[in-house]
Image (cartoon, rainbow, N blue to C red; front, side, top):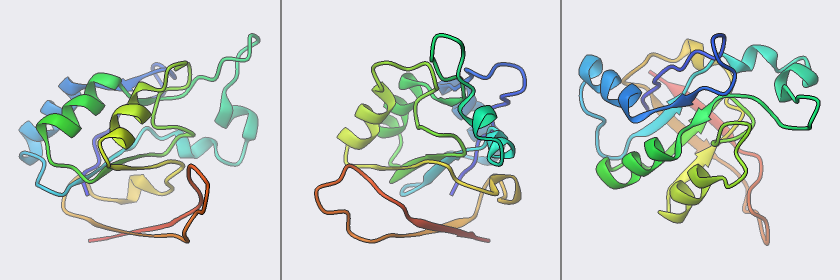
Length: 150
């Protein structure tokens, strides 16, 4: 499990970029085969306040960080990841209308986890993630229990 950081305090619509991934790799080494890449934005601090967590503007657009479509494409084409995760409501940033990150990651047979908690406690490199969940018949997703150990 690898956990690059993107800081939502500066821009709630921040997107984890290919440059962020490359900077992470410069510091911690290339993402290993089979890596799960978790984006820690600090958004989980808003969990207890639903309005702040959704961060919806007057027009109804949501604002929160996510993976950029380019980063998703890079991860599935250039790195042998198993999936990605975020501490926000969606793999895509809040204003997304086309959900390219979802399409890219899930379309490549990888998995995505949303609303991950306590990513600040997970080291940036070297943790293992265990993901368990029930079968979701005729559903596009559902709840899981994700536990990181290091």
